[in-house]
Image (tube, rainbow over the protein chains, first blue to last red):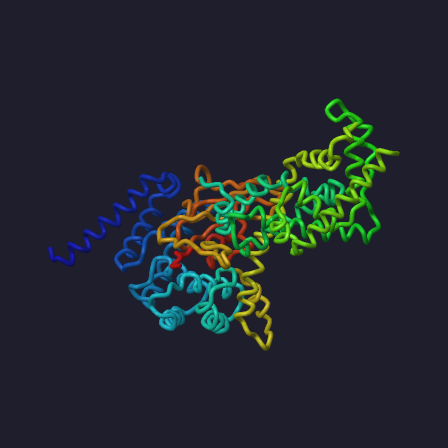
Length: 168
Length: 180
Length: 182
């Protein structure tokens, strides 16, 4: 067995054990999700982990779906979609992006902001400044109907350089 | 948990709005007394006091010394009472003689005591607002003249004059009552 | 009858110094006003911030939407002019959730921070004359959440950004609790 295969196998085992240990701790996963759903989710989570995408937001999405009464297939679709969005964000923001930035960036992508725009914003702001809040705001205003270009310009010109009055 | 004024103010400013209720409970009765005597009736006093607490919350970030939140709140209340008093004068209202207080006289508050209280409130009502304010702050709330100056924005000399005139006027009023 | 041999004013002052007690409903009335200000301020102040950011000379149809955005920046709160303790990453800070829902029988806050738990871990709000509020310790990070009204209706926080996902057909909001570097 090559080292690469061994590392992949180890990663699968670790992710699998993480998913299964969560399953053991939270009865909702085993009580409310049927076997095919759990299998599909495990595969998505495994794939995400291999790409360096944080797993926690994906589990949060599962819990959200359970709380809101969604069926298994809808939860799978949502988690898969989130994984893709976080993957896109991860590619443009790079390894320096925090889990929170990726979550917020995924929301912006979901709302319709091209991932490449988020990458430009990150470059403009400098690598050290967190863009969690600007990405969150961007996702909100775009989802309310503001064109992407106008929204990103507004955030770029003010949202990244100035704190709200109540924070100063 | 630290329940000093400064600690409570900090908690409120950090978003824990329910912590403000501890400050309300702490100063409610203490400052109600001033408001009731200044405005002459409980209803106006409660309104002024509610207003003061609300205004204090709105501008809490501007409280420069949270450890002295009480004094800062009192200053707001004094101003609210001035505004409320001026509004009442424009409406033509004066201190209300509460006849039901006599009808409700009880062993705890015998009729004589109630009448004495009524006369005091009436006498206070005869003072100008400035004199009443100065008298209450000096003798009832027992503040020093420097504190009074800080709260009212009026100079110490002027405050002393107002207190003196208030005392003179009250003696005359109460002697007249006694003689009647 | 007071003894006029004593200083009349002394007697008067003694009488005036008797405490005046207000009942507890006074506190409740004040706190209803205060909670409303808190909820309004989060909404209005954020609109003002983004309204200033827009700098729109022409006003297309979506300008109102841009001006109407809200941001739930609750990690530091309203601390103008005061020192803010540094909040390290991973720490929890108290966050107040407020919903005006006069007709509701129950309101709970459910979200990422409590694993969307509906039973034991749901944050049950207290009702004060139709203004529901609950305080919770929330760790730094981005959190999706919603109000669950009467155990069945999901309501987004009107003072917070919408979470831009419609995955489950129910509204939800985004909460950003940021680490402070002050």
